[in-house]
Image (cartoon, rainbow, N blue to C red; front, side, top):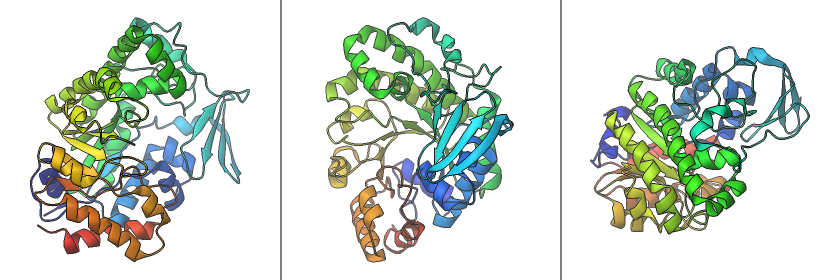
Length: 392
């Protein structure tokens, strides 16, 4: 059985030949463990695709998650200079703006005078005219790590997807083995909302003006749907909805039901109508809202952080929602980071396999992204272990 068949069966709650293995990797892990510089992985889709495929082959994962949109092929031509520092790379663009790429973390963007790229102003923003955000410095598809290059009209919450957004998917498909499934990723409407205003400001504004918050979430849902459906129609095997900050203690159950469920339901319905599965990535404490996550119509739950980072015990999740959605994750990312021996890694992974695999519908994975400084040898243990004890 090949990886595409194995993953498809698990995601449809059936039993493949063995438990599939597919971890999401932090961008810093690519920076530290491939031959490319951080700015190349972040800004050059060719390098990003090479890095994705190289680590998938090294770890023998049963799938690849493409979690960045494609970049314009000429984007790095706008860089005036790249300086290496002890902490990372500093890119100075021809327009004077600066992007700093840490050696082991996501880049961040600043104006020519060094000030952080500004967030949107909740008080003055018009939910019916978000297209005006194409002038907001650094804001491209809900991410503030790219320059506001003169003449570009593809910033802000898009309804139409620029063709280059699909470059990374095309390049990965071209480079990867044919039997390896490729998953796309889209920010949830709530994640877009947090990114647009900054997390602290967004949460306060959500409480101060719920009506305007709902109007903004309604508009941002259109952008999430546009990018998700574009990927589904472009041939991905599944779409991950990244709803990272919708768990506790960011949101209560009541807030989750009000500000997350109805909008993610629209995104999930659109993805499934396009013919591919949708699954949800939410970090932190989700043990108290697994039932609400099912109300979004998702086909699977990703992460399931165990204590102390979260509050999800795999056995409890399996009993509560197993058989209705597939489950992916629950390996403690901190345990994996701190482990000193192969025996420690194997013992932890064995526990996840023994609980998750009965009846099918389980994918072995770290709960959240593999931390940047997790040594590759630890990840190389997982597929051989699944082949040894994870067979049905």
